[in-house]
Image (cartoon, rainbow, N blue to C red; front, side, top):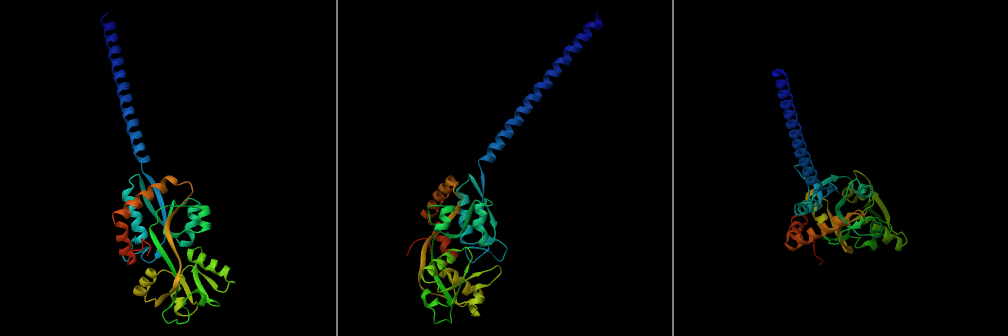
Amino acid sequence: MVNQWGIQKFRTALLFITMLAVLAGCSSGNASNESDTASASGQDKVKKIIVGTGTQFPNVCFIDENGKLTGYDVELIREIDKRLPEYEFEFSTMEFKNLLLSLETKKIDLIAHQMEVNEERQAKFLFNDEAYNIFPNKIVVSEKNQDVKSIEDLKGKKLIVGATSNAAVLAEKWNAANGNAVDIVYSGAGEDTNTQIKTGRVDATISTQFAIDYQNKVVDAQLKTVGEALSNSKVYFILNKDEEELKTKIDEALKSIKEDGTLSKLSTEWLGADYTVEE
């Protein structure tokens, strides 16, 4: 009887211990699952946005002397990032000519590179509504050039522009309406447009006053703008067509950045003047 009673007590105790272990395991598993779920939920709240930009546009998107990516467009994106906690903006740098293809193939989600609207881009992509820069494009020639005072004077001469750039679109459109009178040359990788103009290999390019001011100061480009603006288009970010929600959020952030004066300060700091309003 003693042995049977002892065995029964042992079995009861063992069963009790086993039940406690199972309960403890379930409790631990549930806590872990809840923690994992909460963690995953927290991660889902922050969406990473890959921003395509360049490194060769002075004052707009470039690498400074400390090796840091900076400039007007870059710092504006960083300001937007601060105001949209539900997104995390990360930069991906590349040559300008690769930006639109990278957006189309969804390697990036957004382009920040002083992009203007044109029909070809508008057919494929989505532009945000709130402009963040006014981009006056003018003919640019050597300071010594006294013959070219407008695009009309470039007939029979060479005009160099970046492939796929809006400057190229402007030049091509003007050329098509004027009997292809200008010899349009497309710059390649590593080519120095300033040097080509200086040495007379080409006669002109298309750029903005703030970019030319910077190049004259930093690399003694010896360039000047001439004539009336070929375009005074507004500058926007470009997204894919299915990014309506992101577009709306960016526009909301841009409005607040404009209203509190931050956009004007950024423009003055990086571009030398307030290019956020039309003159």
